[in-house]
Structure formats: structure tokens, C-alpha cells
Image (cartoon, rainbow, N blue to C red; front, side, top):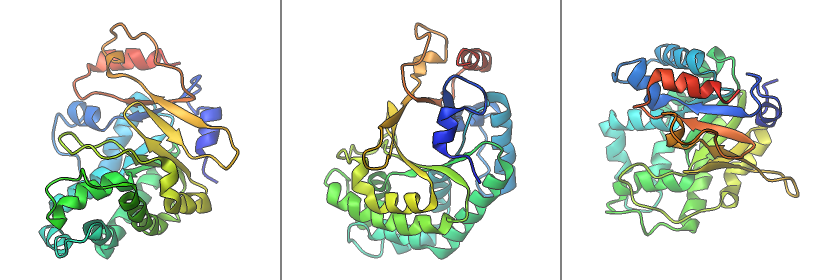
Length: 274
């Protein structure tokens, strides 16, 4: 049985005082690939790339950024983009993207290969329904996503929930909804985690912890009456070894290492976390 996120938080596999979830994508691409493209089209090559980063950084959890996988595939599939733009109805483009059978099969295959090659418990990161809706909203002919509201996000969460069921066989510790807009994207209205109840119903059914990632922390879904659990993001200033000596308080830490960070500094700063 896979290790749950709660178990990782209670007893980090690395022996650290607090569990650390490392988001190393940009840093690893800069350092290990020397800025070359990440091999999203080759599952085993990606797993080898990720494994190198994991070996260096020793994250307590293995973060699979399936949001980046989908962005890569969408960019290279003109036919899918055309199909997504066929109707102007809000949410049609996202529903079409998530309903593409070939892409979904490839995503499940990619995630399955990743899960089988990782020793650390796997966290599947995808955009929050609001952010995924906003990123695909332009296909409807809209010039901005500022008009999207919580009702639109709740509707989008039903599409995401249906899509997530395809990953039922995976031994996931958590599904992490990334609620941060991409650089240059429109700001969106704040949507609480509770709005995404269709997604939570799926994650609860399969025993996956649901989380919402923001710019400064991670909020975890808890059972009714349960104790609120949250993680905190290590600030960027931590990595050069500046005035930030220790990360702020939180039950666990999320470390997104900047692409410009110096490897020697990164390893030294990680060592201070235990």
C-alpha cells in the first residue's frame, strides 16, 4: 500500500524534522540539462532526468508536474487546438482537452511509468480547475480570463474530476491543484478548495490527499471536523543563503528551487533542513 501524505508528514522518509516537497523542474532543467528541453515525449528519459534530480535533492515526495506534460502536448498538437476552439462556450475548450482519449492514455502511461520508477511517494500536480479553465479560455475567443467566477470554476472541477478517474490505479499520495497563474496570465478570482468538491469526492474515494498550492503555501483538504493541515513555501531568498536562515513555520515545506540558484548553495541550504 502506498505511503499516504499524512504518513510522510508525520515521519518524513529522509529523516528530516519536517517533510520537504521539492519542485526542482526549472532548477534541474538549468543544471542537469543545461537548459535543453525536458524530455516530456519520452517517459523513461524523463524518469531518468527526474531521478537524477531526486538523487541530488532528496525530496521526501516525488512531484510529477502533469500540468507541464499537458502544456507540452497541447503546444505540439495543432489538431487538438483547433478542436478546442470549435465552440465559444465557456469550459468547452477544457472539456475537449481533458476528453481527448489519446492524450489521456498517454498521460496515464506517463504517470504510470513515473510511479513505477520512484521510491518516494508520488504527488500528482495539475492546475486547479480555475487555472486550467483560465489557461484554455482563450480558445473560446475570449481575450482575457478576468470574467471567470467561482461558478465557472466549480463547473470546470466536474470535468477535472471525471478526468482524474483515469488515474485510479496509480499509488498516489496526493493530488496537488496548482492555483498560481502562469507568468503573464490574467489574475483570477480566489476560489476556495471547498468549491472543488467533485474533485475531492474522487480523491477521497481513491485515498489520495487533495491539496491546493498557492504562492506562499499548500492547504490540504481534511475530513469534516478534522484538524486543518498546511504546508509553507520556502521563500526564494532562502536559496542564496541570504538573510533568510530558516523557512517559516508549517507542517511541511514546499521548496521550489530557482533556475538561477547555485548548486553548492542549494545543497548547503537543503542540509540546514535536516
